[in-house]
Image (cartoon, rainbow, N blue to C red; front, side, top):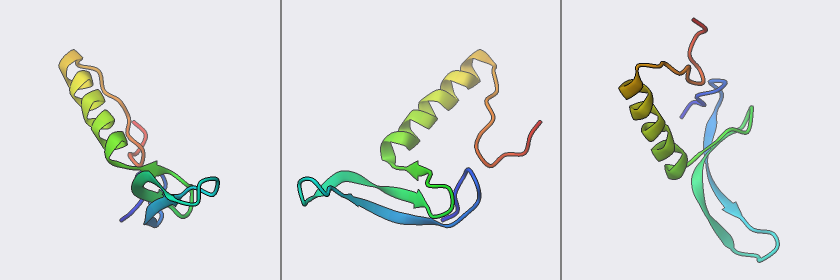
Length: 68
């Protein structure tokens, strides 16, 4: 998978809590280059924001898109 922000390599990331010694609830993708994190919650929020911006006619630039 490629990162949406920098187009770098995104790897599967299952975070590990050092304090408790157990895996956390985060299961997503992390970019090796810039550190951007993406998981199911982030994707759901992006979809909601996308629907809202379509309904009111505004356009929002996404990571990885060329400048207008």
